[in-house]
Image (tube, rainbow, N blue to C red; front, side, top):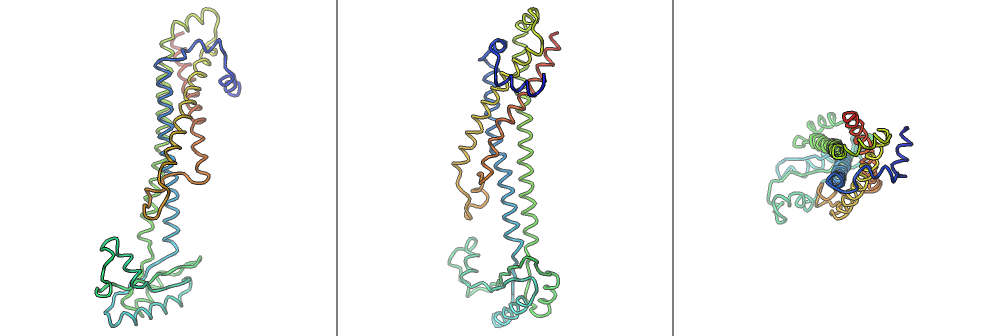
Length: 300
């Protein structure tokens, strides 16, 4: 029988063949529970992978087009070196804008570590200059040489040492999410295979009688495949639905919460969990079919 005919038989049904497999019992509950649980976990693994991808893109976009210049100099030279640095930056190709942060802005940057009442005026805090690049970017090595000659107290940070590790960490989280999905899918297939083996072994006498009256092994296998595929499909639908509901209850992405508030789906991402039930059904179809053929061959 072709794959198309087998799939058509699964959904159309056969009342006579359905009697071969008990509608209730341990294997039915195991298949439903395993499919629902694995689908629920797959939703979270998928959300983790997608959120990691968004995080890597956001970190890359935010850090790739910006740099920071730090000026450390005596108080009486700070203003002159700041003006000199701004002059160098404004004449550097690839830099769209450059501006010195105010005391209030620098105080806001330090507030998470030292509190909001930090006396910036009375402390030897370096002057920070925010640099925004254009699409072409600038020559960091050449700019450092110019600054070293004209502004000795300036240190350029192009965020490379921050961006690369963050992007690498986010990429590994995304990979971990996809690996988790593959492991969950494999575990689902194993559990459904075990349930199908148990059901086939428990009905060995029924299978023997069916063979005596002329039933083919393909007919018997099709009955088990249909029942277990539909059970897995139902369980995965319930699990995926609960997982999507749980995603809706998570807090929306916020700058204050960082990564932990952006684990949900967004836009087209909400369509991807809908693939989980059909995928689980396909896994159940393949796993049960292989188990049925193997056990029926052993019972022959």
